[in-house]
Image 1 (tube, rainbow, N blue to C red):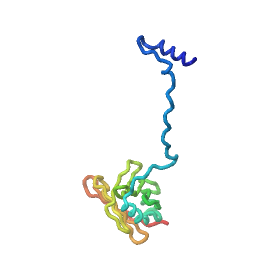
Image 2: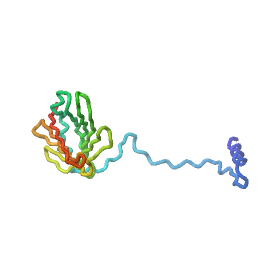
Image 3: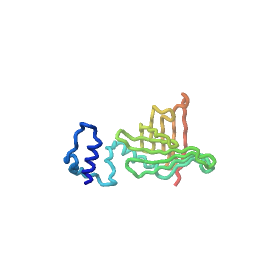
Image 4: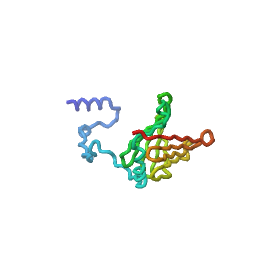
Length: 189
């Protein structure tokens, strides 16, 4: 009955000369073929192939995640610190903070990650878009990352001195002139 009324309504509202729907036009289409089974919920997408050299480099840098790092000025309410989390074969995650009078005046999210084309240091300052620096040199106690297209820094180097001292050096250009910063961190356990 409802189909008949709907058909009558379509005919009544159709412009003169329009084709008249038939009973076949009112028949619902057959159900579509069943879709291919979906991946189980919660299954992550397949990861791209990793660069073996980058994965080995991450393992060499696990010392960075062994405790936190603070400058000596942290004891007096200033200075800086970094905290790194390791344990993954392809990623170190960190945060850096700078303090004045026990207040955070600067922060950055950090990661060192293996990508298909190498190892990268990625800094995201104050939540701004990330800036990537590609590894150019590594040994058992130091690593250097570079991004020649970035102004400051262009080069970031971490160097472990002894067991408990970390030197972080940043080099670049500031207003067309060479600029450098050096941070001396002590391991905090």
